[in-house]
Image (cartoon, rainbow, N blue to C red; front, side, top):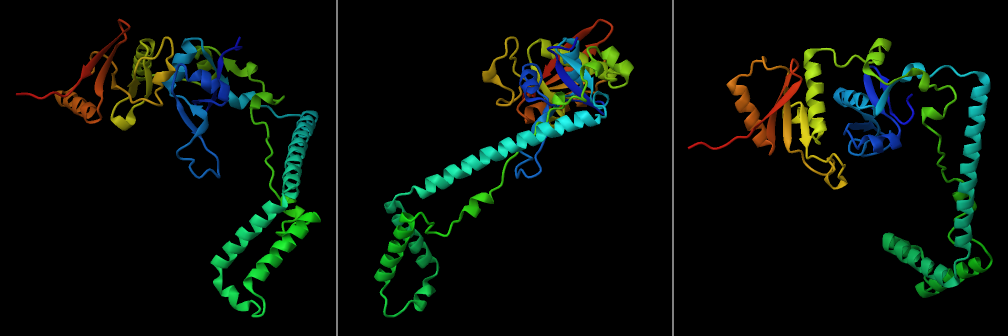
Length: 329
């Protein structure tokens, strides 16, 4: 049974969270990385959206805790038949017509609001436009009739605009076609779960073993990967949030403890991490003194403490050692 579980849609051995509601729920346990962009969004490298790409360790943690299931997204889609396509197309056209009707109502409301402008508002608007025009192109004064003063022209323009407003005409040359040419925003349903030819339940896996047998997931497969999963699970169970730490020279960034229960005032998106964690696969893994010095210096240079996290697979124990650079003498 996959009801109530977060669907992690797997593509090319990577797991994504596509639904916004699942993303909000997911954030109570893991961080992930937003990767979605819009083609015409000027700041798409700053503000990203769904899908949320999860680290393999996050996927393993969620599945082992019984919070998520893995979905073979490619096989969950099958070719629709003609009746299904016709039904989907009819629903799509119905939605588009509804959006167009709403846009037409909005345009008519704008037109009605414009035509009900008071004479005083029309006069003031005309005066502002004349001031802007005279300031922008003073050379136009040379074409004015020498026998007609500027005051008379202004008064004549105001009289015309008021007269036009009284007769329901547009004194500024704005026709109804301007509103008719406005663009519409048509919302098209995007989630695959709403499609009749998408069968998620038939291609969902609630355990790592079943997903491995189906060939969609094979992490962890090596001692190093198992050590990373063990360290991630241990720190997460102690209440820490973990994110990718490659930019700081480690495996994970470790944020303050917020679980349980989740404390939204200490959101990892709003606060800096406290530790940079590096995974040591086993107690027999050689570690040179210069490496320890480098870890300590790097952590201090980034204003964090460095964690050396050792995984003992035989005894199923994770040991963490904090390193900080200190002055001597």
